[in-house]
Image (cartoon, rainbow over all chains, first blue to last red; front, top):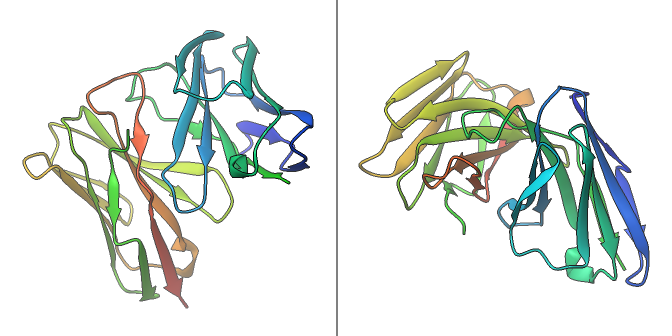
Length: 114
Length: 111
């Protein structure tokens, strides 16, 4: 489980705050992902990066802004969030974008928006 | 778009019993994967089955795939309390670049 780390593990923020989630993978992978997991809903793919380049934005509102400075690090910048954005945010990585590559997940950041 | 749908939504069994979870999907796929998630944690990959495979085993896990019915099942034999978790299937909708998870089956194994 230490292959993909996420910080912080828990975050409470107000709707006017700006915060960032951080993900780091120590597996030498080239692809990284952000997912949102809300209660009783399917896991939602938000963003995909491959070799630092964004390849997928799954119609995510602009109040979520991803950043991938290198293949090992992925950030999710949060600004002016809504209470319905409260969820578990999961980061994952894989060797490539080939679907046969296993995705390795971090433990997630539990976000609460007040 | 949501692809995999797990059934049942929740399952409660006694330790030692077998647990069967099903996944149905809508479009053609290249592969289907099963993942496990302990409460509030990240997902852990269990097994991948390709569209040209019908059955696959890994330890106490057995996965079947029926592409004609667009369904898959995950069987956990001789369940243990430590198997308590949510189980998700993920399908690719024929797209190699991304895949979609269902809402999961919440399995509770009582000691």
